Image 1 (tube, rainbow, N blue to C red):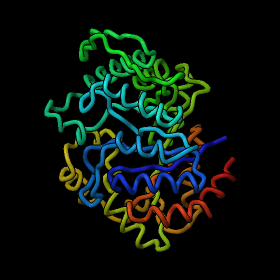
Image 2: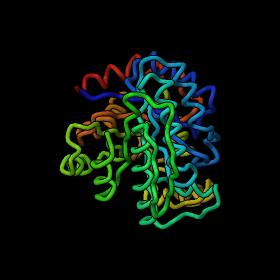
Image 3: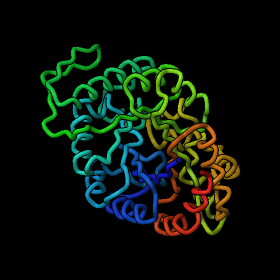
Image 4: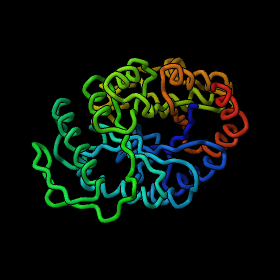
Length: 322
């Protein structure tokens, strides 16, 4: 049975409102909630970037039922993997075991802030593989020493970690990350409804594990307003992840998408009040073999009205997909 989730998007909402939205989304009936982990918004018009981990701690204590996860945290530059392991273990305890640690190789947009440059993609993948191994070992609750090529860990130990520890989801985009997810991950994470990702994950040994996707939508009573808002705040999405991972700041995303038209955004993101259009966007992931799909409602100031609509119309319609 497919589970449907809600995205707490740090780039478009401040921390106190994110906590309120999390509570309301749980009341609305969403099965799980994912939170982005950014130092920057994608575009200036989004206007926010609170610390995800502090906010997750508040969300964990304000909610009771929904599973929580990062979508996704990069454990290689802005955070050392040993620090990520400690943060995740703490949120796992605060949420009574409802937390899944979503990990990915990151974007220049967020990781350049520590002043270490942005490595080429092959180096980033090496760093990511080491980081995942370190986190997995620390979750066992024993002392860890790790003399890696990119990371060193000296007698680290998590003194507060749940039993079982948080599960790990790994974001994938191709064969290398799929193999890593199958070896070290408890779940696959992706942002495209690509059935080859899920089938390759199964072939690599991931059969039976969750496959978690995410899809942007822009609900609004006015289709025109929805298209305008999606173009203003989400046209960065048009570049694809190979481009998005490399751009260093909001000005770069604005320049790279200056020729993207509102109709271009509307062609890839459902906009307006038609529930069937939004359901069809989610259905693409369901048809591609995803077990869990989180929606992103574009526009931080629209969340309250969106969640009312989702409870009344979207979630009942999504339930019919099963």
